Length: 136
Image 1: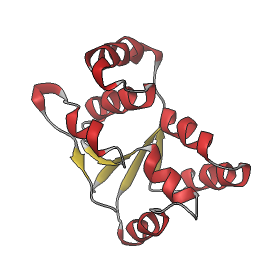
Image 2 (image 1 turned 30 degrees about the vertical axis):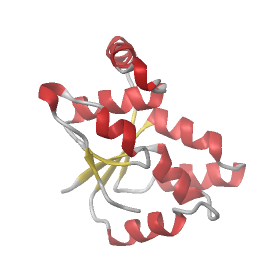
Image 3 (image 1 turned 60 degrees about the horizontal axis):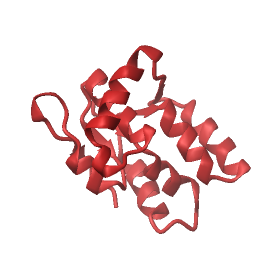
C-alpha cells in the first residue's frame, strides 16, 4: 500500500474552500488509494489557519481510515532540535523539523506539501531526498 506523509499546506488547502489549491486537494483525494500519515504537529499547525467549523471537519476527517495521526514522542525532541540547528539558515519551523524526523522514523519519504523549497532541501539519512508528490 502506498503511504504519504501529509504536511499542513495540503490540509489547509483541503479545509479552506477559497484556497487556490482547494480543488486540487479534493481531486487528489478522489484518486488516491493508500495510507495518509499525519504527524500531530501538522494537525496543530493546520488548525491555526482554520475556522472553528474547519477544525471540527479536520478532526472528523482524520478519524477515518486510511488516515493515521502520528504522535511525536518526547524522546524525538533532541533529534528535532538537531534538525532545526542543521537547517537554521532556512529558518525551519518546528513542524517542518518534525516532518523530517517522521520521514526517518517511518521510512516514508513521499510527502504532500506546498513547501517545495524546504522539502527539496532537507536531506534524510544517507543523503536521501523527500519524494514530493505532485498534487497541485
